[in-house]
Amino acid sequence: MHKALLPLLLVLLALPAGAASRDPEADLKRVQQRIEQLQRSVRDDIARRDQAAATLRQAEEQVAAARRRLDEVRGRIRDSDRRIRELEEERRQQEGRLEAQRDELAAALRASYVSGKEEHLKLLLSQKDPAALGRILVYYSYFGKARAARIAQIEEAVARIATLTQEESAEREKLAGLEQERERELAAVDAARQEREKALAAAKGRIKSNKDTLAKLKREAQALEKLIADLRKALEQAPAPAGRPFERVRGKLPWPVPGRIVAGFGQSRGGGLKWNGVLIATERGTQVRAPYAGRVVYSDWLPGLGLLLIIDHGGGYMTLYGHNEQLYKAVGATVAAGDVVATVGDSGGQARPELYLEVRKGTTALDPRRWFRGSAP
Image (cartoon, rainbow, N blue to C red):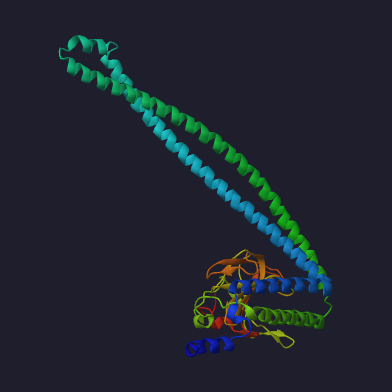
């Protein structure tokens, strides 16, 4: 018995303290809480150290919120349009059935009229066989029931058409209200973007020279490096994600957006700084899709990168997506390959819509072009 227990004891002794009873879900929850606390700390630090950046963050978050409300209204308009088309189609079908039922009833009535008003009396006087007479009278009762059924179907069709007409009218009124709401949300987006431009102008107004610009870039780079390091510490106790290891998909990943690379990995940014990722120019609002499964470990605003989303793929690998207009996933969300996680924008003070993409192994930046299929999106 002691010999049988020995291997188990050796395994337990080799594990870290508390690992034998570790609850993956509890570990994941603790990691998520630490990351959420880290996000709050970053926001507080921005507000305390850089008022211009805090103002820009607030303005760009207002743009994102207004754009989100606008997208929701547009979605409801699409649903209303679809419902109106469905009601119109059903009404046309009901009208077609009603026309056919009326034609059938008219034909039956004409046949009854031709046979004469005294058809039952004629049958009674002309028949010698009572059994045959009984069968014919039963047939006539069937014809009468059929005519009554057709009349009932016609009445139901007329009532249904009236209901559909009322529903269609109500849906059109709803659509008109949604169109007005869309116009209000469009105005809200424009107003938010104007506030963003004011905040951006104020932030740029504080930069007096190239030296100030370089100092700003260095501060932003340091903020990102610190964030990555803090996330790595927070993820030490996170359960390993299931699925194929990220390192095995090198060179096989789809690009998160279509577009054109306007800044490449390792290119100079001036003052000794280099790009740690690639900058992809594309259309505003383009959907950003996760290239591989993972878990969102950061979803917030960061100086220099604006609305930033970071996905942990396990094994120390992370992908970063910056300058987004909207973020669709919160910290802790599990994503699958192809999931829409954000939309492209110009947050972080960009002059045009671009997606910033990084691949990290620990704190080391890797060339994204070696991980994604083809040399460009």
